[in-house]
Image (cartoon, rainbow, N blue to C red; front, side):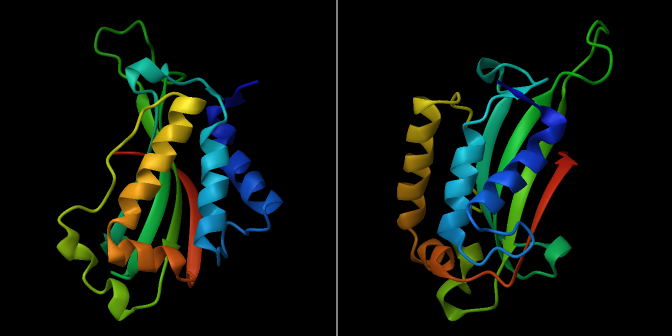
Length: 169
């Protein structure tokens, strides 16, 4: 049964906790990734259909102003919410919201050159829930393993983490 889009961050938090991971104190990146994979398989109500890019996910890494330029890795699920505004209006568009788990790391020579990779994310994937999404998650893992910096940060212990749901863009 689909969950309401507004409950999506709470559901992700429940999955993390069920796996022994505190959303604001993640210490195990693979465990957080497994929880993210489970979260991505949950149907969400109040969003565009997958064929309209209503439910996608992305993995991002880098250093950003909002985290004091510390090395970071994030897992995000973007939702095109249809339960806002007036869909009958001529120029109506869904609102985009993102559920994001951001992991912050200590400085380390193994990933000091994250910016040199030439890209800072996997790009959005909009494969539908079920086997297509499972296959997409596996492709992303293989992609991340190709880069020593990303493989190293994946094995590291975050110093802090934060789970949010915010309007995107």
